[in-house]
Image (tube, rainbow, N blue to C red):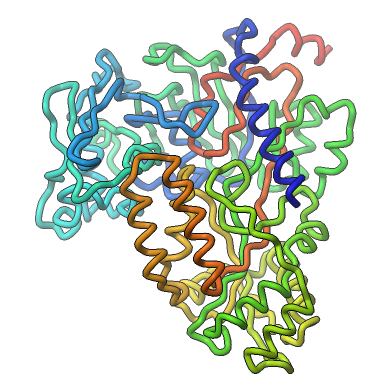
Amino acid sequence: MFKTKILAIFFLLVFLLLSPVLMAEEAEYGGTLYLSNDTDWDTLDPAYASGFDAGEMAVKFYDGLVRFDFYSNKVVPALAESWEVTDNNQVFTFHLKSGVEFHDGTEFTAQDVKYTFDRLYDPEVASPGTWVFPMIKGTEAALAGESDSLSGVQVIDDYTVRFELEKPFGLFLTHLTLPYGLIVNEDLVDEHGEDFSQNPVGTGPFKFVEWEHDDKLIMEANENYWAGRPYVDRVVYRVIPQPLTDIAEFEAGNLDRTVIPNEERERWLNDEEWSDYITTIADLSTYYLALNSDFEPLDNPKVRDAIDYAIDSEAITHSLFPHYVAANDAIPEGMPGGTDVEIKGNTEKAKELLAEAGYADGFELDIWVSDGRTSVRVGGVLQALLGRVGIKVNLIKNDWSVFYNTVKNGNAPAYYLSWWADYADPYNFLNALYTTDRIPFNNEEINSILEEMVVTTDSNQRIELSKEIIRIAEEVGDPYIYLYHTSTSYVKQPWIKGDLYHQMYSADKLLTWWIDQDLKAEYQE
């Protein structure tokens, strides 16, 4: 386990360190990039970009005030060229780039920033992204229909905008990287009306060309992009729902890069022809079994500990997902803030704890899973592992809607689910998991540390606070049994250069990609 973790982090760091060096190769302009997605996009309007697919696509057409650095999880300037933070992380003043234009030639100003955030909290817009910026003054009044403007977003002049927060919030810059913070223009939104979500017009590196739903989406380079035009002239995204069809299209030379399906990983990773063109990156994800203490005997910390000891996450990972990493806490690979808590997997210790809790003969437990193939497989392994210590598991399988509504309303005694990062910080995992309404876990010490985490801008301090939360949760009988963290393997054509493999879905704006036309011609002869 420990060796696997070290290797995963090592390869990620090596990639991040070498990427700028690779980009030093003489890049070429021109050509069309062919990519794919496994589902159609529900919207290209940042105000509604709640899913990874929509957010990943929106950043190609729009920019925010800040973004993630291409080669790290550091927040760097975008439409804002600089900023000052005052009043104990409660006032953020942004100085905007001048001369930036929207795709139609309209000049970008501070008023566009103001409009974007006012629109986000317009109750008639009904954006699902209002959870992202509730710390800005005036959001509550706006949502209640008491104001048509956020008092906490103030235009100082054409190129200066100020945000005032209700209380200190050290992760405000990180929140601004989310797709909901991408800047739109009022006149352009009004021009397209309800069709704006199908006709993206931003300041981003690519201009919208065409969208045939469930088939393809085409964009072209923004020649006047403020950060320099992309290297490729056009990008064609194809919608290919079936992974095996997708990989077949790649092998036929019809796609320039794609995800290797999990069932195909072993074959591709061991293929000498392709091994040099494959990159595996740790996802910002954690998969877990949640235990709801509203149900007996899960309200007993010893019972929760017993279940933890009974479930060997390494055994689950090795048997089902050999290319993933077994989890020992909530924090995924490649993100600081995790611990070296030992993975348990001790059947005798589990039986001992059950006996101490008064359940020497075990008990029955309903575990809810969605009816997806992977969820059912994991549920079956959990059922077998817990059966070894006398816990009879009833696997309750339902479609996603029934499953999720049951979990969300706190009506599932135990359930298998995951959390994927909205942004790259341990707070995003710990706050989501330990303050949720889905389970009645409420630890005052953990709550206090989470409040401290959200205030500080010191990343090192947040890392230490993260470790402390994990330690406390372990002591009080953690309501989560962490199972594994995923990874993704990508394969590209030899002629593709400068491609990014960032852990954050919204980081890649396709600005660094380029096509070696001579090499492509050689391969296609």
